[in-house]
Image 1 (cartoon, one colour):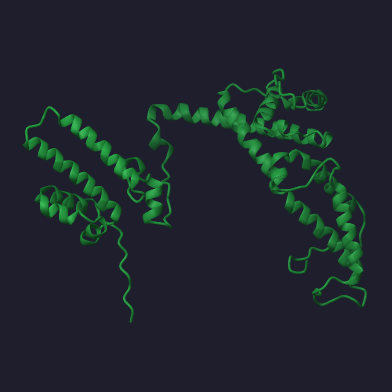
Image 2 (image 1 turned 30 degrees about the vertical axis):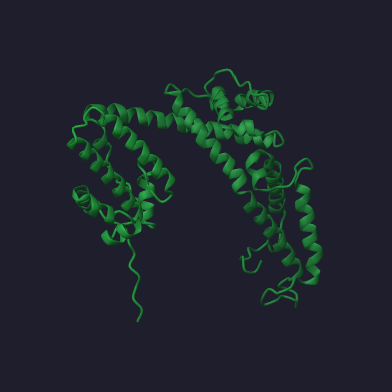
Length: 354
């Protein structure tokens, strides 16, 4: 039976204070013997080498200070302590294993070191527990009012942005989907003039579409009398959501479209009325499907605009609006298929069969 190795996790505060008290009161010869080797000192007191090194520095500092007091050298005491601190600081800097005051761990680093898999919890408390009673009603009404006005803005902003995207799918630049771009749209919703000076912002197209849409939707404007900082925060969060919705969900949309087309191919090749209907998906691609898969790939490649380069994660996040034409083209294909009559519509296959 093998013995388990002892893991030295270091001493606690009380143990370190006790060792420090012993070291500063030891005779000079015995003190030099105990602190000559940091590793031996750490093993004898069952502390880490870093703790032993710090204890040695602090005890030497205290012993020299006490010796200076005994020799009545009060006039030069401040200069000596300052020089000693600089010397200790230089020595600690040269020792890569030492943990000086400037390199102490913060709270998160400390808990990650001693508790690698710990979890943090947040206590929930009531609204009245944090707000003084005389301010509760006023603050609650202001929060409720701001929430209602931001909700009204969110509906109108998303409605206009969606309608604009459907009419101008090839003109949705990042400047329009950014926080400043959405804040410029809120100016129109508040009945204010559009003040955007960004040359990449499609100001003329936005104003033209706004003038047309306000005729059929006169309630597209609304009032806002709260702090504009709240409105700016909403625009920032909405911009992040829109960009992630376009770029983050784009691979899923492409996969769904490929499944849709492949399901059509499987229905054509393996019709339930034919004798070729397989009980399981073959390991290799049937010969009759090679041409169809090539057609799906050609159709999918043709959906991408000619000006668009390679689609990778960086390109998707840099310009999410450039994906709008592809998404609209896929939606039109779905709508066309849904408008047609099919005796046996495309079935949904599981991931294992595809």
